[in-house]
Length: 162
Image (cartoon, rainbow, N blue to C red; front, side):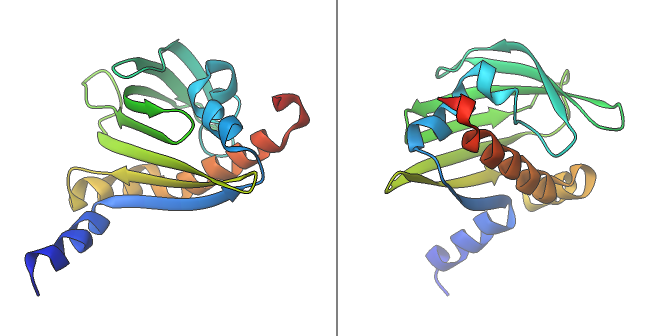
């Protein structure tokens, strides 16, 4: 097989991906990610709450926050926004410094309009398969992503959102 054939498999081994269709306009789903008042209401797996220290949603801007687990454990996080193209695409880097959880990866999210609904594709890309596997094993990242997207789905369905 040629080198081109092996690259996608290699990428797949080091990523966690999800696709979901939301019954909400693309602009709203996008804003749910980029507006501080929105994101704190749904971010994180079931039972988690989020406290934001700073939120600067622009390329180069940083979102510093702590996720409070239902068991009382706090998870420090830092997201650095790389690319923001409203309402189509969001790219950011998660973590990477000693003062946050020791998990570093890039996230690429696309938002497609499908007749007033939004198809979102979320890719978490890790530096290696081992880093991905560690995050799945230690933090339950795949299930956590499913639960987080379910919370987002509930949030964008609320009538107060407009």
